[in-house]
Length: 101
Image (tube, rainbow, N blue to C red):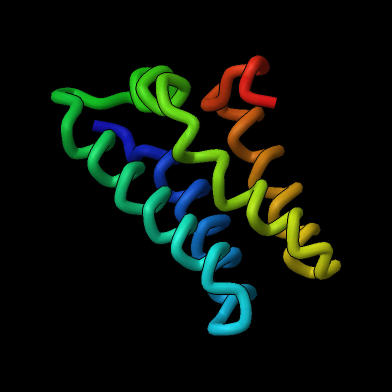
């Protein structure tokens, strides 16, 4: 089976958000940790998972968008940049619903 590129790429953005948030922005860090758990649960819960199936399952929950929204709310430039990059990554994988905005 081919590697699941969606999981690796989204996890790298989540990790960047967690790292940048550090202890100063616990809301961002906690939302990132929840999104990371949700991503792993979705990926592990789909038999014969593909990027398209994972993206479809991620679209069903707004949990994945919360870290980016929390990061943007901080108005700290590096976190805003990480949040915007993360939203772009989710959108590029078709893993968020347009109605979520």
